[in-house]
Length: 68
Length: 364
Image 1 (tube, chains in turn brown, purple):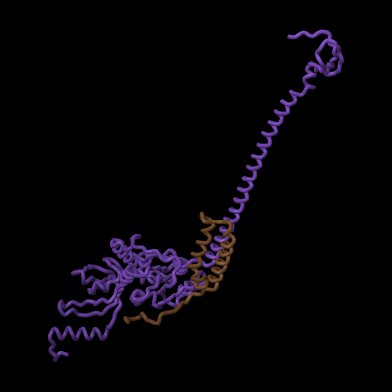
Image 2: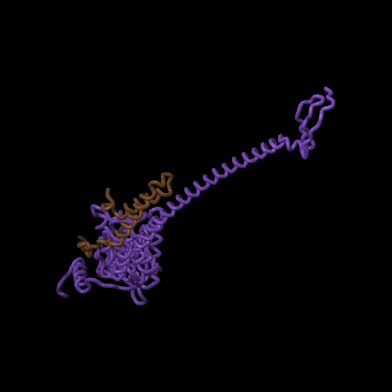
């Protein structure tokens, strides 16, 4: 799944995994720069997504003042 | 009507028709006495004041708030003459406690009843999703509470699908409208993840809707996890007690429902900062570790050098011991030439070189 199609929640999970890698036994200096750049880009994307997202609020047409 | 002969039944029917025409609905306030429930289905009691008393009759399903003797209530109903017993009663459609004491009494009675059934138990409480995608709201869309709720919701989070059911939130029809809205959302093919019921502050009487027994039971029975925010912080209603999550106010309901996007952005930045710190720590660790290794190698070289220097000094000492000059310094002499009588020999001491003639040689 590309980052563009992911929800904010999925991106946040991906970021947590990416950041977790730095504390894991899999850490290697050779890969660290690329991983860090990816984390920075993902964080920026999440921030943009969060800032622009709007709620979709709609009032249902159904009336509740008497039995339907 | 003296000339019209009526049967008893006709007379009762006629009286009831007249009463129905004259008083289709009456609201009477009074104090409850002789309260009784028959066969678990019928409720009868007397309504009295200082000067009069009247019998009241109703189905137990119509009694939405428990009552007991001594409570001050308003009954809505229709006066009629009971054909079977010949008694004048009020057929009650609804009952509402009035006055602070009675409202509180009704609340306490129902609370004790629901508590005994375990409806407030923490075991029943379901948790809400941390970031819901789709929620339903039941409230009056004309209220300030709804405006506050949506404002806070929009400030804090985005991307949420919110379906709102507009109902009355106070007055006699409110409880039934809210019940219908709860059923509507619970019968949807795809259920919302959270059902939110909100209402702003008001008097005890205004909030009485949320102490209605059928409504309270409907909330408790909702398939969708419920979040109820009614009144102010100090207001406690049975509706919020049976809900899965209670919010102190409608604003607090919005805060409980979704995370704050600014807080998430801050947390995301901190996460990346943490990764950067971890990265720098690793580099520092590797640099330090390499330096320590180099130091160890340096120390080992130094140690070897010192050992070699010590050995060299020892050897030098040994060599010095073997130097003939040193032997001469200790008082010995070096003799050169043939050791035969009449021959000249050269004797070297530390300070002199002496030539001498051999006069005698004795073998040892």
